[in-house]
Length: 261
Image 1: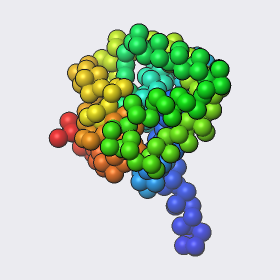
Image 2 (image 1 turned 180 degrees about the vertical axis):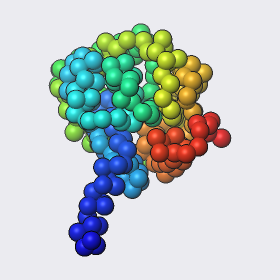
Image 3 (image 1 turned 45 degrees about the horizontal axis):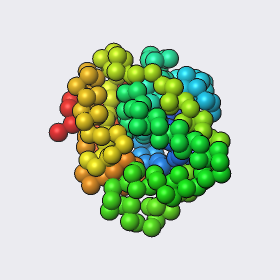
């Protein structure tokens, strides 16, 4: 056989054999949220960032993503992206091989969260969209030390501007209408990596510890010196945790599931 012709076919076969990682950003975030992961994980998995603002209803957002990607997938979601991941599992659990849930929650929005989100929607509709990030969210979303870093602050603002007012309003409406996922957790038997920042004020360590207790195949890793945007605040640590966990729990792994040390 002509080796010059065989190599491209072999490389294509290997690419088709690679597992798929569907990445879902959080509110006011886009693909920039996963920039370090797209660079640091693509050598062993096919990464695809999907739209989290395609509809005002959470079931439709999840449906649109499931229709966009074929076959079995691993779903990775941060914050609102994790909420979408739960809905995707509810609709087609047989297609979800693994879950990676970062800085997220299984609970209904609290009264405070609902009030704040509705206030932000009002601000956006009145023409004050930019102030939502510049005056409010960046200091809540980031560890205090990271909130002082101009490059990271600029990146958070850029993601919000990339998202835009209309998409933001759809995101808020979809997540405020979400169901309580608590009753689903014990039925999610696929390998699940839970990760959050020690100083995450939005989706706390306690929330993730509760998810770990209720999810039979879950692994929890807490990232030190980190707030709500773990993929950007501690990208090397996040990538290392995902890489180690993936090779232990992917469908091609030989050894059984085990808790992360």
